[in-house]
Amino acid sequence: MREVDCIIVGGGLAGLQAAIQLGRYSAHQVLVIDAGEGRSTLCRTYHNILGFPDGVSGEELRERGRMQAERTGVSFEKDRIVKAGRHGEKIQLFGTSGSEYRSKTVLLATGLTDRVPDIPGLTPTLGRTVYVCPDCDGYEIQDQRTVLLGSGEAGANMAMILIQRTNDLLYINHEQAPISAELHRSMKEAGVRYLEAAVQEVQQIEDGHITGVLTEDGQIFESERGFIAFGGNRVHYELAEQLGAVIADNKHVKADPRSLQAANNVWIAGDLGLHAEQATVAMGEGSIAAIWIHKALQQMTKDSR
Image (cartoon, rainbow, N blue to C red):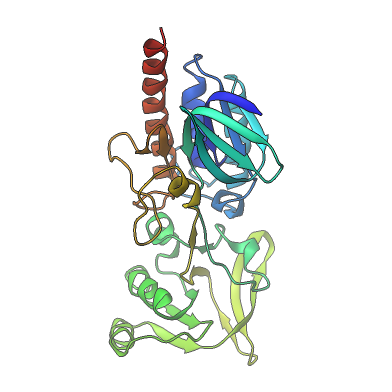
């Protein structure tokens, strides 16, 4: 059983930024527990992060962030936390490794997992020329021939956003899920081309540059850029709920808008929360949560004297 001042669950961009901030106070024992997965492990290139005009991969950011945090004394453990509870004034966390961890404070940066069907050729293009977030990467498809792979109304709603960026947009409803007549009309009026067909392969050239998609009936649709919108993303809210946080209807976690505290001695940061799902937002929230965790730990020290 390991006991520290603060445990950060999740080693993505939110968790790493929080670890750097907390480590730089040189006052707390900080442990990051990470399963090694998450959105940032899939994204080949972030294009909208300050200081990287040519883009930077999620893996590179994670490697740099861990190194930067470790230099301040932050520790890392590879494990998947599957259960949380309280033992007196301490928070208990239990991993699939069989290990138990205890801490005065916890930051949950467990994020969410996008629902991405197993379409050959898709994964290597993600974050390179195929995107998931119109706020982050709508710029990348400006006036480009774009194919949107999605499911039902999740894809249709994304199409209505993307058509503002390009007038050459094809929405392929890969799962052929139903779409309301109203949305069908809106797409047609906006100029979105629509097709119901299962995608057999995302075609690409080297370095994840999409060239088109092949449907199961043998048709090839050429494309310069792509987006996905399948809906049903899984928010990893369970630990927050077990520790007393309030969960919204969409399974994101509610928190104080100023401090990001979600329950007694529990904070959240990143895509777990109720806000725009962006890497830069996640990093900012990591810092904000860490500042308030530092304040809480200082107060605990004073109270124990």
